[in-house]
Length: 301
Ligand SMILES: Cc1cc2nc3c(=O)[nH]c(=O)nc-3n(C[C@H](O)[C@H](O)[C@H](O)COP(=O)(O)O)c2cc1C
Image (tube, rainbow, N blue to C red; front, side):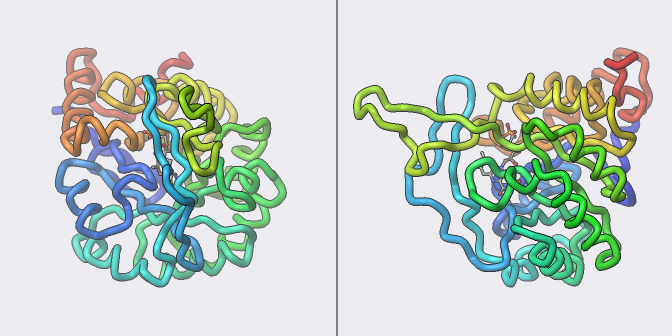
């Protein structure tokens, strides 16, 4: 028997696969289906203080190596959180609530709401690449990240994950997350990109610029996890182009304790969670390992 369970701070997952934020994460029935399909845990869509309508369509476009999206953080607002996550909390499902804010006081408000609603953990979205003053602009400002984490630390008593994207300050901000006692770093969010329609000769997305996800960003995620693993000693959750057990194992060997799955659900369905867990289990057995923990960061040896 091999042990697929992993621990991230006080959070225990039955296996290392987690639903990524923004993918099927705004209704309880979707989140329950994902967990019942085999995910170890789920992350909600990022919630903001007030409801956000998001950008006009088109908000997502596929291309040959993945997707480009600029949804604009559309969400029903934090007041809707209770209704959405209560059915999961009642069943003891690891439910990570993603939050998007602009400053310390907004994050404090959001985090307290999530905590009071029973969230198992929170994930601070400091990396959305296409919404101004929320996301990447915040996550690439080391001192702002420090003050946000300080503001939260004494307010809530559940694990805090910091989701970062690709920026010149990624390593510096990771160090600050560790110093300020974040429980894990989540890497990476989508990477800024653009797709142009050659017939209309215009960018396809209404926002023009969006975030690239899927297999195009997988090697970028592997590199980010590898470098951050060398820099800090807190758990890392790898995200970006996970579409089978192999891409998941790659992130774990780079240093991830768990992986999140997003875009690949669009073409593989929810079965992907079982497929990845079974594949990791076979890989561990075939190579003489007894647990996922034994292979975390092995690419550094
Ligand atoms: C349509 C869409 C919406 C997303 N919304 C969010 C979000 O609300 N918050 C967040 O932190 N990440 C969001 N993401 C980013 C994903 O959580 C993930 O970091 C990224 O897509 C890379 O993983 P993937 O290649 O498996 O999709 C979104 C991604 C997509 C494709």
